[in-house]
Image (tube, rainbow, N blue to C red; front, side):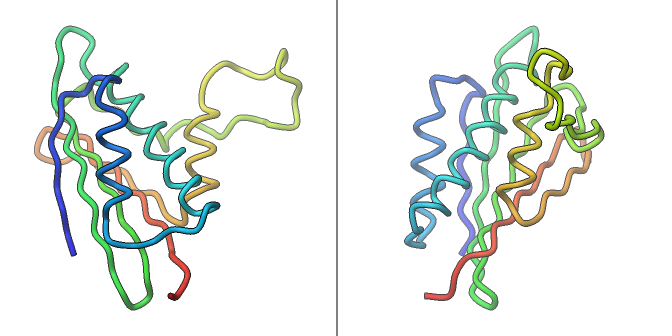
Length: 137
């Protein structure tokens, strides 16, 4: 089942986005729900803060639930500045916070919490797809 929502890319809309994703039609265990929520928050807040520096633009969020095997795909689209969050190297988490470069930790956590992440720029839009494998019910 595929569902789509479009909202202004404003952090004020984060709760609405999280609620939309949680209502995809699957009951998540606490760990899975936390991983998905953290990932959705990171991506949506990044779009809200960085995609549209001069104006407010829209973010399109699509959820698609598959059965065999069970998985949830969450797609984010925006028409903001082209940006591939996967192009940057992962931070060296073995370094202390003082020695580590600023930035990149949020995307790193998304990579760790989701099973697959893909980015593409098509038709003037950033398209970021997050996939989470779900336990069999």
